[in-house]
Image (cartoon, rainbow, N blue to C red):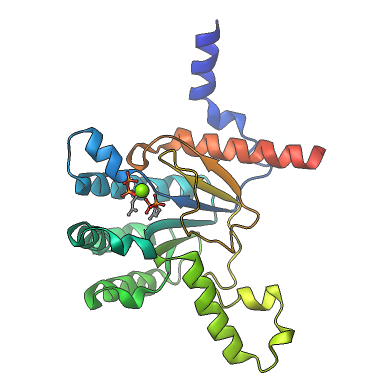
Length: 249
Ligand code: IPE
Ligand code: IPE
Ligand code: MG
């Protein structure tokens, strides 16, 4: 019976993954669709951002449970400043809420380290302080690293890296790819293996332009607040199948 098989497959997708085989070490997620999720329910867009924040917490926890070493979350792009001030302020305040003490405690209990990528100097001082606080308080953790992309843009990442790199090298002809990428916000961290975008859009929207050069891309029509563990497994499953196919080729 087909429906039974489909249901079973959906339900047991975790079991279809070989957890000793090829797994993404670094997952990057474009958490898109909060606004549409809310509008479809007759709610203000802020309700979508709030719900998206809860999904983000759960996603950090599910990645951690499943042994993912690094998770990069696109939370606020350099283009997102163009949104109405009220919406921008709401999103920024959510970040402060995230770094409240209860969250830090939870991160520390789970051995999770937090870092930010992007130009955070453009945020209000109290926001920057809250960001530095969570980074400082979780620095010693080694279980998983979560990179929040805040005021992040792939183009500005590359431009700021060029400036720093040229400052350090008298002879620009000696700059190699490996040398250059140390100056990106992501520094020495490994590049993402798997890039997930929710909401049905299939663009990079200025995310990790350099770093995603070889990432496997995975899209779902589901809006970010509805993202769940089954979808994470589906993405990991597809990633593994693609890697196996590449080996066979
Ligand atoms: C993603 O959801 C969250 C941020 C960009 C901060 P959106 O706010 O872009 O939601 P849609 O794409 O308008 O539905
Ligand atoms: C990308 O989503 C940025 C984040 C998820 C933070 P956007 O909704 O801002 O991107 P566009 O405008 O659809 O390209
Ligand atoms: Mg969007």
